[in-house]
Image (cartoon, rainbow, N blue to C red; front, side, top):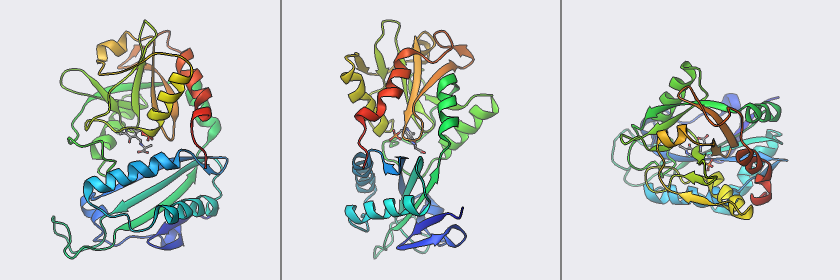
Length: 285
Ligand code: PDD
């Protein structure tokens, strides 16, 4: 099936979906993005993703070049044109096209907007969640504002590649004190031996995940206790369960960290229940 993308006001077949060589996203990673899950053809937690997009844009002083309502129409149109029932929609906004110069273009140019969508394989994702994944730890070598969802993802790319080359599926960024920050494209969680859910507090050093926020609601809804604090790799080794959360993988159990088995080496009941219950707490629109 042919795919379509939205590029600066036009819906184009993929082969024609191109941005300018002097787009600042391409040259400087001067832009932001969002990834929303699509389920039953509907966008999951669009409102919160768009709120975070606006925050990211604000931090970089890039104006949103269209109304939120119009953006919602574009996201839906791209999902529909690509006939995605279960998958993801990707939105990227860069500062725009200008002669290469590190400083912001003056006068300002219109930001570039690109939207793509693609199907995901539900059976494969469910199979992955049923077995759980192995992660490896890598030093967190990212900049100090990873709360902004920028398209500058080179450390994340390298971390993921290292994980795959070592037989894992994902990497956990760990700081110099052994504190687990987050995964390469997901937030990291553990369930302690006492049964408490722990995930790192969200400041400038991790991304405040939308799935993370929905899981907070689900945890409260199930009467479980939650601790928003730092946890170390050592604590994770001793955890009863571990998992990661993201828009594309939802709640994905982690059964091995740096070659050490977590819990009994199988997805635990807490992560499995949160995955099952997720859509009761998410917004579909
Ligand atoms: N990544 N942390 C990082 C570094 C991320 O890149 C992501 C999402 C998350 C989870 O955020 P959310 O729950 O809002 O998806 C945490 C997306 C899915 C990606 O880059 O593809």
